View (cartoon, rainbow, N blue to C red):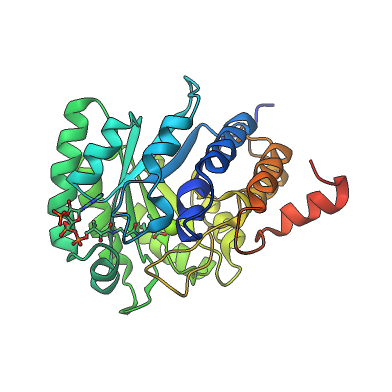
Length: 303
Ligand code: HMG
Ligand code: MG
């Protein structure tokens, strides 16, 4: 019997490494990405073209793209905040851009120095240009459960912004628990609201940070609601420079283990991801944050 498919977007090279010291060598980032692709990642967020003063760790985004040997069946995504970022990403020949906004004003202001409405106006213009250029557009909505500055977020507010992002032409919208505070109960409440509006479940992605250790439980809850797309970060790397309380995304290794045990197919090899995470680990300021990663290493030794 064929196993149902779940799509994983690997965000470690961007969401993971954006919070690192600026001195992770570009070649180590390129090797990390290429190993993840070898492990089976088919959509991967390579870097962000944001202001280098705001996020110094992403200042070498052009170098990372230029260093990659591209595989034809892989979508290499660039995170972009505005027209200037789009021009840089386009020159780097990305396959898709990820545009982002927030469902809370406090985070929008701190993260992109704009209100939500201003950011939707800016990214609306960028989406139009990208689609005309034949570049696919992905979207993010942050702070879906709570904001580090404004407190809890109402599901209705998130659903409104998801609809606006889809109206811009995003092929999928990723719902970000930026500070990793959500629990399965909140996932259920939010997805009831979003799916209750008739939004196509295939256009929704869940993006959990794992600050409070609920990432895998939240993935399981989302699966029950019919979600089949998740973002994850190899080794559980990361955090957000403008949400100090956030730690890394739910680890790709943890999500792969769960999905395999639940009978889903991802096309991504767990040992391959462990090897990729180990390859970059020596360049990081902290330890990898994945229980499954640690268990694999303990059981099989280094991959
Ligand atoms: P600003 O200071 O308001 O920028 O920052 P501005 O538009 O006023 O422009 C000021 C100067 O910056 C200009 O240069 C621009 O050209 C330049 P000048 O004319 O003065 O010489 N500039 C740029 N340079 C390079 N690349 C650019 C760029 N844009 C303007 N793209 C801005 C506004 C959006 C640029 C800034 O706030 C920024 O870069 N923010 C990014 C913050 C960030 O990367 N946060 C993390 C990613 S989001 C995230 O992690 C959440 C997510 O994972 C989902 C979740 O977990 O919820 C996606
Ligand atoms: Mg994130």
